[in-house]
Image 1 (cartoon, rainbow, N blue to C red):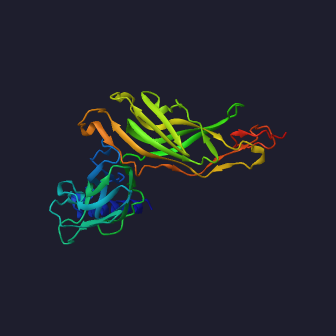
Image 2: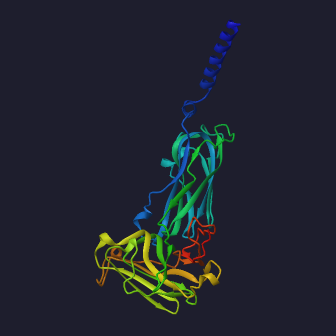
Image 3: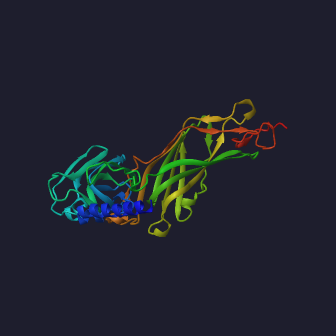
Length: 371
């Protein structure tokens, strides 16, 4: 029995040696245990550009690392963006292309298409009678080009099919496919946060913070807030409380007429260290509720008309100079910025957590707690 196993082991070694001797050296070298990696890359720096700035021929590069021996690869890239449009897709140059790693003179086909929201491509060896019909290692596949404006966009990569050295389909479930790539400056979004009610006997009021996410660097902004003045009365303050984004160097002003508030903020010229950007509060707004007889109405009070939109946004380091350079002045296109337009609810009720009828949503205590 021991002799049988010894003979079988020798036969196995002989079979492996015979197999390897029948394969060419490049194919043997391609038998790697490293995990293949597929991803989209770019050399273009959109972060160095203004939000909304025109983009022409943004280049994305499809790359593969640690590829095993393959003869064909099909892929698609979905462009999830309202701001960038696919223009064309081309095969990567021979010196960078994965499919020319083993045979620099190989006959390669490349079938590709670019639609309104998708790139797709299929690359492989067109003539199976040529000396080498596989490739492996690291390299590019294709270069994708888009045009539009610089705003946050997502690209979703899918590897649709890969064929092996001998034209069998490869299971890519264990490949490291970096499916998502996000590029471009984020688009700002306005919101209202921190609703509070101050119940003093002289003049109780509702306060709320006008907030913004992902504000680009800027020195001046104007926002219009529309509200239902049948339900609310705006408290027009000469010096409203500024939010954390406008803590230094900004002058703010508020004007109101017939339910329309115009809020503006502007920085003094040249103090670039204190120009604002990012996410946070802009200003505190105060309202009086017209009907404060809460025990005779049902909670919550729903204010259907309540919205906020940017109407101007400027980056101006130049100030009063007559011929500003591009880098000194930029007037943002705010037409696609995200405003706020949805009802707000003002909840009232018992605010004592020890009471039987405690209302966790209430910001106004109506004196109805029961114990």
